[in-house]
Length: 387
Image (cartoon, rainbow, N blue to C red; front, side, top):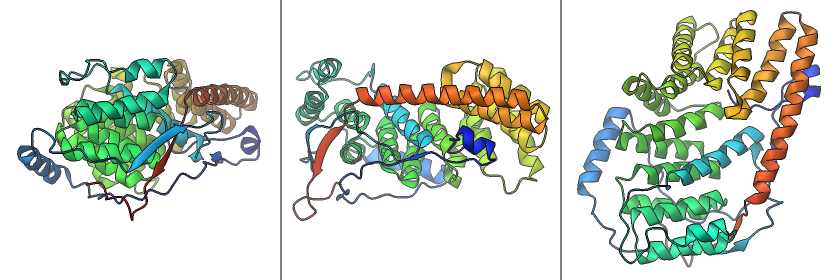
């Protein structure tokens, strides 16, 4: 669906725009990380299997981190980069990564409590002490779980570059961990590198092709990006092939195909996309984004009454994804205007404006509650590069 944001004035003037914000520039990332390339599905899976067989069962050592977390900023001045849609997606993905650490079945060292005190500190509103507890746990017991929790805590509080360093080291020590690669991919995406993010998430999906989580992260990222790598499309095709009764698998693969269309007259791809979307909403009748994308397809084909019906169903599906509900109201206004129902178009535009304002207030309130870590990175002259 792309980077979507429109004002009422832009609509009335026949223009669509992307609302942009300005993010205060963070310290330059002084560590040089090897990116690698996400290979085609078959080759990548073979390479991962070989690496897994030769990797050590336990980490050999723990390097001193090349950053220092010193405090937290005023949470009212977090800012944003790019469209609101992309910024909100980055924030949501960070929370999704943190949720992968909840209820982990990984064994803890007897020296570390089953529930380290960091979680308690976070709930008591002391994120700085919490992240230091996570770091101390990883230093005392450099387990996969402790590394992941440390990286996730940094990511949620927008310490993106330290999160990249922690997840990179965690991946080197625990190459079979798919969630470590997911965390690394999301951290790279938060840093502004779509290519690095896609590569790491592709690798995560190759570790265990039956695990839906890496595919869902890939799907969420491609939902707001205008470009897409061939490797990402291959993984989403595999997701739909391996899990044909998964609504999200069908939806994300349909969206992938839609973005890969060679031209608007590609009727064969359009037919396949329509079939996948219809299957997705049959499997999950409350999948609002599925109806929304179906409406976009119909509008593109100038089937305006069919588009109106699909947009209405996207709105009726519920506020599970409010961002899609906003877009559905706007696009429904466009469709009504094409059918000459100008009064209904104006009504939908007013609803869009009201919902956009409400969403902006909610996002601002959430950002106010999340304190952002202040950190410093050591200079290349005094710090060794992460491995």
